[in-house]
Length: 285
Image (cartoon, rainbow, N blue to C red):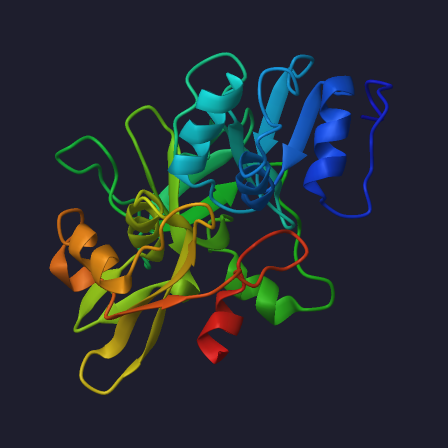
């Protein structure tokens, strides 16, 4: 905004009515996934509201694929998703001109190197289907910070010996270099010896009619170590979907060990100021 000499509407908080009132006078909108799902809940969102818009950008948290498709169907605009961190600024982005893949945070930006590695920081090879295995996302480039202020031990832990920054995120990369984030390493669920990546289960949940959004967490289990647990926010304008219906639908979509042992319903998911779901609060609750 400063570099281009543009003006900006800076709102004190997200309010659907206020945003929709300003969209016709705007060309670029940057938001988190929650903003887009809430805009879709308002019938006023459509071609007229977005007539002047050039670009919609999403970041801070993975954009659900159902929101990606629903927004494009309603407005004709394809949301551009990207991936960044406080420690690195922007790392990847779907292209401005080119294919924007649903569920993907895009490709590494010019000058940024990205790799998917195992815990020994050795590159994970491509699988038979052409996409890389799931591993830790590491970043290298001029965008990466030098280290944490007055925390040399933490800095040493977060950088590899060959200078790559450990993001703490888990992901996979396809043959074209598009990154797909499957979750935070600390959110990985190990149940009965199997690894369950919450993002995969959340994608399956979000595609079910009657589910507006979801979060998947692991809770202590005496038998399995951790049990997969789904926290679901239902669609307010549709017939209420039940836990049994959700589980039956998931049985046709994902492996049995990934299916939640429990489905809990809430009015809203707890989020921080950046719009990210606070799974630690869900686990405490």
